[in-house]
Image (cartoon, rainbow, N blue to C red):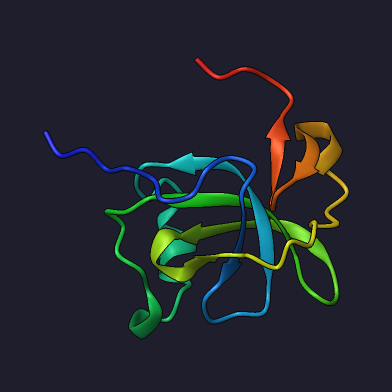
Length: 108
């Protein structure tokens, strides 16, 4: 059995490697778990491999807030120390401290 370990944690702020947005990780799939239609919409020369963690982000850019689904290979940790302004953050997370958000709930 092959075990995949996620590089980023819930509440951690990350940036996209190529596109100008950042976000807070609120869920992780151990490998691709979106629709084939979504996957096929990515240009073939930019399509990430499916066998890696994919992250659900409360994302922001200069124009808007949204939910993003991003492969691990396309993310880097954000060390700016700046919080993310997504309006759904208070529903999922607590205090922003040391570059990440605390969870409102206890994980098993």
